[in-house]
Amino acid sequence: MIVKTTRQRRNPVDGKFSVNGIYICFRVENKLDDFSSGRDKPSPKEKSSKSSPRRSKKGERHDLTRTSLTLYYNTEREVNTMRVLAFVNQKGGVAKTTSALNIGAALAIEGKSVLLVDLDPQGSLSKCAGFRSLDDDPTTYEVIKGDADINQAIKTKQGVKPYDVLPTDIRMSGAEIELISVPGRDTLLKEALDGLEKAYDYVLIDCSPSLNILTLMALTASNKIIIPVAAQYMPLDGMAQLLPTVELVKKRLNKGLAIGGVLITMYDSRRSMDKGIIEAINGRFTDETFNTIIKNNSKIAEAPTYGKDIFEYAPKSAGADAYRAVAKEIIEREG
Image 1: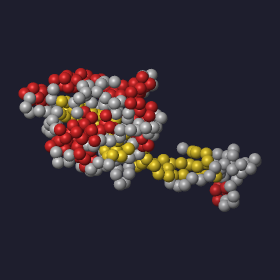
Image 2: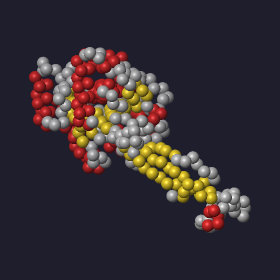
Image 3: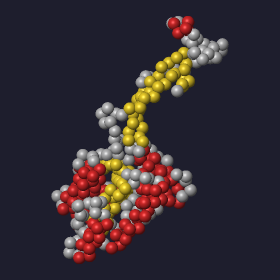
Image 4: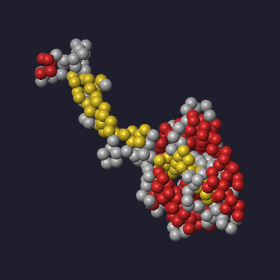
C-alpha cells in the first residue's frame, strides 16, 4: 500500500481492533521515499545522493510513504474471547433482570471483567444498579443508533468488586419504531460491542420480556442465551415460545447461538407445583439446566429498591450464596 503524504509519520504506529470480541493488535511501519513528480522511482544516482529532496518544476515536494501493516496478538494477553450472554424470556416477572445484575456482580467478585447491557426500555437493570437518573447522558439507545460512542456511555458500578453498566431509560421505547426501516438493524448491537476498547471477559445483556427488534439484536450479538424460568407454568410456556425464535436466529443471523443455561428462579419447596415444573425443565433441558436453583428470598427482592446487587445489600444471605454458585457454574462452562 502506498500513501501520499507531506511529511514522515512517527514510526511505528501501534493500535488494535476487535472482531467478534477477539482483540487483534496491529503495527504500521512507514518507510519514506522521496520521489519527484512524474517519476515512478529514483535513479541509482538519486539513491546515492545526499542532497536535498528533488522538486517538481513548480517547486513542489512529493513524498511517498510505503506503509506495511502487520497483524499480531497482544503479547500480554494473546486473545480475549469475550463471552456475550443474553438473559431472555418472553414472560416477565421471572427474575430475569435481578439474575443478570447479581450474576454480573458475582462474576466480578470471581475476578472477571464484566459489562452489563440494559436493552429493556423500562431501564430496570439500570435502576437496580443504582443509575436511576441519566439526564442527558448517552445510553444504549444512542449507542445502537450510532449517535454515541459505546465507550463514552458506559458507567462503572462500585459494588463489592467494580463492574461496568451500559444503562438505558425510557428513551429506548422509541427504538423499535425508529429502527424498523434501518437496513441491518439486527446487527447494530453487535457492531457497537465490536467497538469496545476494554477487553471484557463477560458481557451480559438484559433483554425486554418480549420478542421484539431489541431482543433480536441481543440474540444476534450473543454467543449464548441464559433463560431464567420461574418455577411456574406461564414462564415455562414463555420459554417454549422463545425456542423457535432462537432456532430462526441461528439459521439466519447467528449460527453460533446456543442455549448457555436454564436458570430456575423463585422456587418455593412448599408448593408441589414448583417441584413438577423443575422435573419438566430437567427432563427437557438435562444438560443446560443449572444445578443451582434460586429460591424465593426476601433479600433478593429488597436489594434493587436500594439500587444495590445482592452482594452489596446482603452478602451473607442465601440469595447471595445461590447467585455466586451460578456464576461459578457459568465460569466452569464458559471459562
